[in-house]
Image (cartoon, helix red, strand yellow):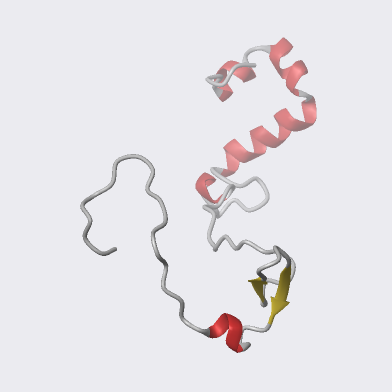
Length: 106
């Protein structure tokens, strides 16, 4: 069955109903008669699939810690209160790639 098949077309096409399955067709009939959710007639059809609500969060191991890089190329997990990771450090531009704006401070 394609995407644009209406319930009326499905109801008048026995081979299509067979492909769909009697149980699913019965559920669709109840849904149509209820005007929405087949298990709860008071709900409109739009509540069958609610809009997503919430937030997306990225998680990883030791997320609560900070990763400290050493001169020899090794790394160490440190507490956020550790003075080595809590200090403010300025970023200095080393190289620019592509089109950049003037030489004003960034």
